[in-house]
Image (tube, rainbow, N blue to C red; front, side):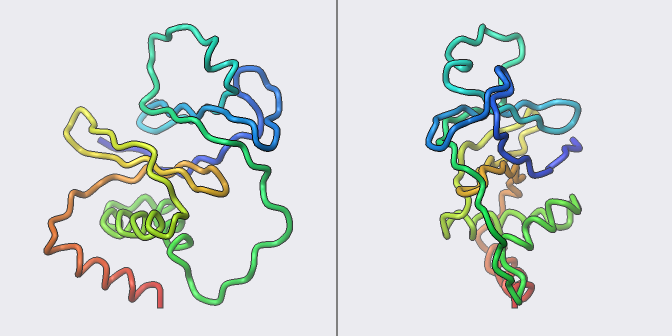
Length: 164
């Protein structure tokens, strides 16, 4: 199964009503599988509660609090961070990076940069972990390579070498 693992950013307005989200407002993120990839919709609570039963149910959904995007420039980082490396690997979509993507996501979850929202099992038995970036609200869909414990240490060392 080929799947588009792109990062999907949080909307700043409700996709159902078009109204902009306000700071502190709760909204729902709905994630759908579509055309070999994923489609994200962010809708206000009112639209979520009033939506009718749909033929196509979302793969996953969750409730979040809207935060305005950060203003100003990001600090310059001299070495590559785990988040930078994960973003780079997500853009490349190279199956050879699946293990590293998974380990990087776990590292960022431990640092509370990413929040795991759900774990799904596809029809073919593969697992995907759905993460949301705590500050930006971006969604990361990470395939779970179901590593054995004896494989984890080696991959962690490889990732640590990349971050030096």
